[in-house]
Length: 120
Image (cartoon, rainbow, N blue to C red; front, side, top):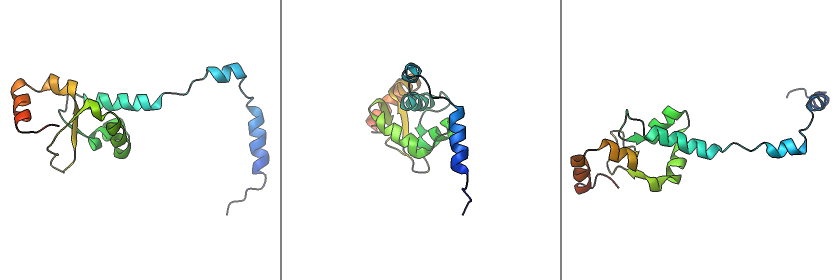
């Protein structure tokens, strides 16, 4: 077990070196909109022109997040996504945005995807 004798005194001395923010300054500091930034990172990755379909794992690798976190946010923005009915070669779900699909899929591909029920 670690020796913690005197650690409280050290912490108290350290806390005294940083004065508290005045109330008006503390109120002006807004928390960062982290969730919005993560959603935007995922949207940018989904619209990456190098890929037509993206997996949660591929997006996670690109944006440096865990696939679980990416999956959570993909579920949050699911209404704006197209999900492929056909998984990738490893059985993973593939996603794209409606805008990306329209911009990169030709009319023939869209018709064939619709007829073959390739997208949901």
